[in-house]
Length: 272
Ligand code: MF3
Ligand code: CO
Ligand code: CO
Image (cartoon, rainbow, N blue to C red; front, side, top):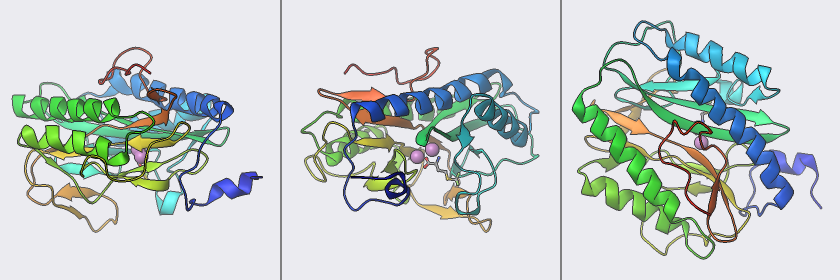
């Protein structure tokens, strides 16, 4: 038997969830995805990233959920906003967005104890072709990774599909950050790598919940974390992009808990 408190700590093995648990994830995922949809018209030159954080926090509370990142390991904001060469975990601030920026916004909310964790890329004003290309490569790598999710395949199959495509496009896959199991725990077993060999790693089973969240760089994959302890940037200062979905393994494929209900996010939900 499990009690609620059993869910609070990282598990030794990959949890297998019930049909009822899928319902919990649908609700959490929907609020997180709707939050990212809500932000679309607000991403404009001159807007401070803290203003976007404020909007996200209010949206989450208004929908009966809680922001999962506030107080998480000392983090103080609702979302992470990572512009240009910031790979992930950018901290919102009073600094304004500029025409031509590309930014990732990553939101995690908790609804009835379940976590919905998702991120997307947004273009600020007019963006250069090479930045658009990086975003396209990142979404396509993600889509190919998600396509591998079904019982019997392995986590290595997801990783290899992402790496093969991204590197084939002369981009690189960040090694130092990965996806994760999630559910009642924010960051649970396993680590979901975005690079690796087909057929390796744990076998996917119905009821596993985890994120896929590749970070793809135009240059080399090395990153460093700034003195604030959070902001990760590319060492070579090249652009980085990321997207993230919370996923559940179904009988014959994957359910994306964080798909945009307004179709404003690539990749489109995959069948299954
Ligand atoms: N949402 C991030 C993830 O995808 C985690 C952010 S933790 C924070 O796992 F504290 F930086 F917000
Ligand atoms: Co995540
Ligand atoms: Co996230």
